[in-house]
View 1 (tube, one colour):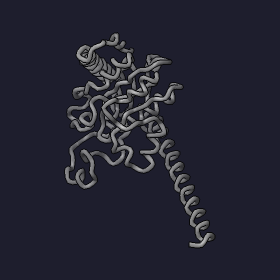
View 2 (tube, helix red, strand yellow):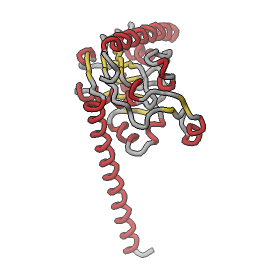
View 3 (cartoon, rainbow, N blue to C red):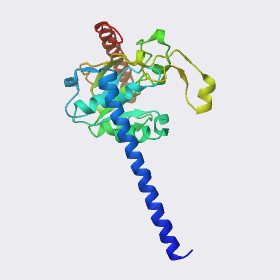
Length: 260
């Protein structure tokens, strides 16, 4: 290959990478503006209790997971990064990062691939980590069981105990009505390689959203033995789930109607 041809290929490759990067940035900017509109105008979101999130040091933000498409993760991250000067790291299913634009956007905003440590390294660095301990089971529950929390996985509590980080309970109201799970289509789930494919509106319904942040639950003093840490984590997990469920029940009663 001649030197001039190699130069042409190198320049063309650089230009293609530049165009791809700019298209990605444009897509992320569009998604960000869409989320702003969705949160402010479509969902008419109200937020209460931001003062309960520590101004410094590690903390685990624990919320209920609901709605067929898991929009609550994006909404919660948007809300907290708006109202705080702190970055929130949310462990997300690897599926999220497979989507063009959305995956790169989530990563830039602080989402991290889900693993058993649940953001342990960020907690030890004194940062905020947000988790949905119900996992996919929170999204898969039928509409008739809306806002009935599924059992919390205790991994977040063990990380909180090890890091000496408080747990901040959060309730998210509105996602169940915005994306109600009316059924599922297993064949489409297999076709697209998804955990499940819900029967739900193609576009979120305009439900009224409330995000309420409760008072922090202090982490127990760091037990030295693994058995003691595990026992403390189980207690903290149960206390956290009870706190989130209480917030959810209270805020559902406070909301006059799901769509106003």
